[in-house]
Length: 332
Image (tube, rainbow, N blue to C red; front, top):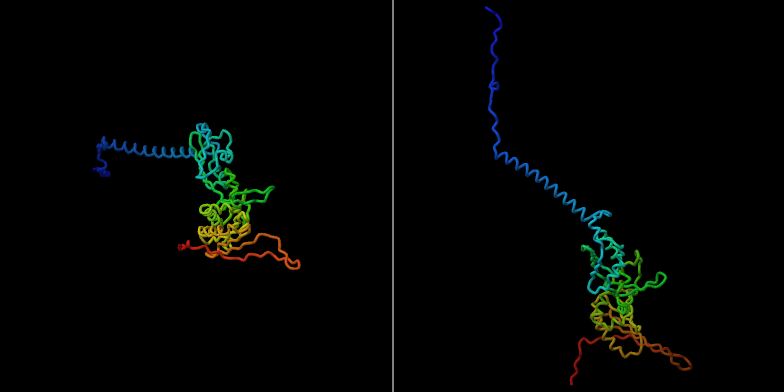
């Protein structure tokens, strides 16, 4: 009997059992759904890319770099300049062409609108300006003009210059105004002009003076036309505006009171003094209801007194005229 080793069979597991089962194939509907998900993903990616490309194209076409103008834009040469100004404006297209000084043959897309706007605003007569391109060949300029209220004379330079002053204190040369209108503006006195850049710094605190001149033109035009100069020397310290007239008289207005009442009193006093011989009159309206009036008698030859002595001419005293509050009725 053999005593050799006994061999027992190896233990087998269920994993060793052959399993000839194939995985279940994907249905037709599943394959369709997978295909649609892939298509939507690819479409979304392509849409984002198209939007980015469109934004980049619009940005580069609307704001081209200097010297990078498309050939189609170069064909739109500027042929028309159109000026639209504010009501009462006097500037014209000749002034516009001279101010912009555009080179010949320039195209609309080659225009630097911000630089051209700054060039227009350097003229103090222009308060605001806006420029726009209107294809195919037109540049439209819209401006708002300042109106002058007074004049100043500048003594600097080889010869004196007469400049205009707007209601906000801006000093400018002025163009397009009627000479008769300019001659009718009063001179501005009692101010110090400060050089700033190519012109002069704006005069501060001119609003009360501009309001007085405006009210006088509206309510007392005949009085306004007799005014030669308006002084600001005492405006800041005493709130008083001193006006000199063509006949040498002086009128003092209070900048702290409304002007229509003061103009009414002045008109009344001018009528009362109409028959006064040629003399210089000072009317001070800053006191309110009581108006001091001083009359300087005209220069006359001194009268001879006893023993050859001469007597000075009698000076009229300062008196006060009170305009009646209401007309008085007289009984028959």
